[in-house]
Length: 374
Length: 213
Image (cartoon, rainbow over all chains, first blue to last red):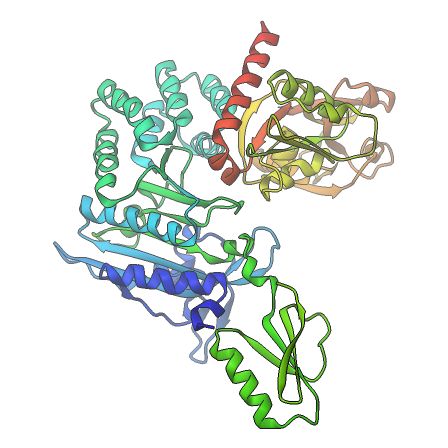
């Protein structure tokens, strides 16, 4: 049995993704378990969960068990004209789960592309996001949106404060009825509110949505984000990202930090998104940086929900021997079985609750089959 | 074999109304009308599987992906804020979330307002937006008796006709939000069964439109 076969689903994914990212020149970013709390408290809205495990270090500094990797990567990156820093990470983070309301240690793999970004960088990251999902399962969908288009419409509506937040919430829920009600209450320009509803309703493969998007770009020539998005969408084909890429404007990562492309990945059979990412130039600016940035994270904990038949058995073979058996004979029998690619547990009696494909018995130097469950 | 669309329906009268709408939309499942205690019904030919669940649990089944879609009251969605798509207002099960108090109650803004409710999040959000200091008393039922027994000053609860309030000498003093049944979908399920879900949603939307005219 190969070492790779023995790995759990998430471990296999980690190995595969590291190879994928390293193949395109992304170098591994390693970080400490701890980071100064100050880094997180200044940007706590960016964190998925605001709660952070903290402790006071021996020098009196308030430290935190890292709830996020992106902020550390930004902190340690440099602004260099014409240069792009490409890193990937595979780190455990510590966050409060939405569901259990308790802290959990989660393994996260992701990448960040920081610097003087051009369209090539953006397309490369989207294609890597798609390939990451494909590595997990071929039955995936990567939803992509452009926050520049959403911001253009919200700005044109002239909505601010809590109304703006309510509208963004409705977009994220594909909730057109409440969106209409809010627009009606605020007596906003009816053309803009219709455009808004049209944009939020768009959902499908890039090819099926592009004509509608092109029409919108033609009708609103000052909506530069639309033409930029169309240009990028057309380029995705060259990166081998096919019909698994869908346009969906309900993908709205935090609009205070993200801008431009935002995306979420889904795997059939997993109820939550397993990948999330986007351009976060606004966060960079907030942290005093001039560079642009795009990245994503794959949430490996969500993959537990995927069906994995390889877990049906604890071991391939249970080899039973009696206490009088010669050690050399037992060792040789085990060696022959493992050499044939099977996992083997040698025991003197059948352990309770052990699930094995076959039970073999070693008697008088001969191995015979007692049970075959495969 | 068709891909099965899993639908969580709220048990009770609302669920029966919802099923009638789904049936009209072409997602029929005759076995659901049999008089028995089964909770799961399916029609493989149409590709639909229904299950009856407690109305307040529908959103959980959908959020966690046990159901691809479901129908839940806006009250439940506001209270539990599940991470789901809210695709359509079905315009049935209409009522309102309201603040009620004993007839003639006068709110003294200098005192902390004692609010009894099943809907703690909705009440907290509502009074937060007004900057009003409140003390939430979370109850699981018979909310109406709280002001009568002096347990609370007001209650925040669903009001349909107002009969129960009237019979207990209570009256609505403020409406927080109108409530109706909403079609919700699991975010991942929607991606992989979007054709079926869009077909159903469009037909339901047409029924809502026809009814309104």
